Length: 629
Image (cartoon, rainbow, N blue to C red; front, top):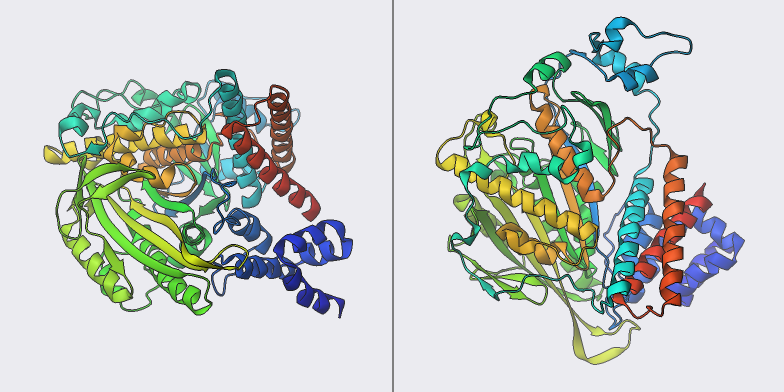
């Protein structure tokens, strides 16, 4: 048939011509876009032609996989650096099951008015905020008309927001004649040893709770801000306690595949939207395959990648990253409870064999396993202290054992030693609370004797990338965890490091010229994985337990800041049409910015090139979405 002939012809013409033919041939475009076979074929063509990694048995939307993973890596084996700045942050939310009560809630007047039927009048009790509504009533009347936004469209909204910051950065660089793109750092010294510089005062124990609202004063409203704390980090008299008794406490109302609806005292019902939301029924395998696996694929295709697990203590971060408390006992088998770290390493080893078998490249894998405890970095393999020294890609671990991994047996030994040296402590919120940030740094080196055109070379081409898997210690409220003494200092250090991480991610998303990596050992260590050409995947964990509603809301806000999409405190409904309009506006503003830079002769700025690249990528996604609808 004609389609069979195309399947035989396209590999011969190459991936570039295959994509071009799709643009000029309606028949070919229809065949490629109407199903997954066409894009799957093009993905296999580019993989074989450019020696890019595509997992076996992958079940994905091949069009999105091509544009998200393969096309950006097209210059992996080339000296061209046209896609050097490809920083992306993707956020997923995972919930742990918990007890929820059918309590009465009071909505703000403006939200209550929206629930009234035409001609219906509001009662005095409703106007005075004295009438409580049940959770089921709010769900049926208030959340029933929420629009279903696809994960693809949510990611495009994030790209549109990033395009806005890229445009602002380019215009700023043009005004100041900046001729560099690299993030400016405070390079006062080239070696950072352990010392008192990173010590945190006990009174900073609750700083992590307060920093989110202080960063966005417009959202620091009654009931949505933080409680006042005493100088020792404990809960002081809460001026809003009377209001909390009247309105209730924060709680999660509903969880959908792309949004979370929550009730916040004094604010009412508020939506948090993400590209991927997983309820308590989602298993470990789905968390990995639908989210974290993207980081592994990116690292194998030449990008630095990072997976961060963030949330309150006891919300399931360590379970998601490693597995249940006895996860070490299940490593020899194929347990369904194993987490992201183990599954990532297994896939890297499988990819090593696949790439060698298909003669794509030779892959060498090595790991460094460390923890950050009270601003001191320690090697989990041998228990020695580790210093951080500057390198071309960030900071390197000086003194940390680097273990070559050629088999699962090598990994088992690393994990066994790491578990022996990890710091845990029982608190009122978690019987086995991690008291340090645990980070597995996976160094990948790929060697190939052919260039991007498949021509043999006398010297080896070497590509180095890094995959960082970070199990961050949980932020906690001392009033709930009941910790004292050294445990309180641990909590202060944990919360302070997470505060700096949030500041760094915000600066990266907004393409600021300065990113405060040096304010914390944690962010110094993560600099190579977060900055520059990196793919960052943040897994926000929360619990449906009503008693931990405030902490879950804070974690959701952190994820919201990471992806640069923040809803207003009023309950605005996000429709597909309004999302597309926002994307179109961002594209038009960017086009105006590009034209302005061209007229001023600023096309040589790296920020201009980055802006053009981001605009082209978002335009391509927008056109593909229009063609699909």
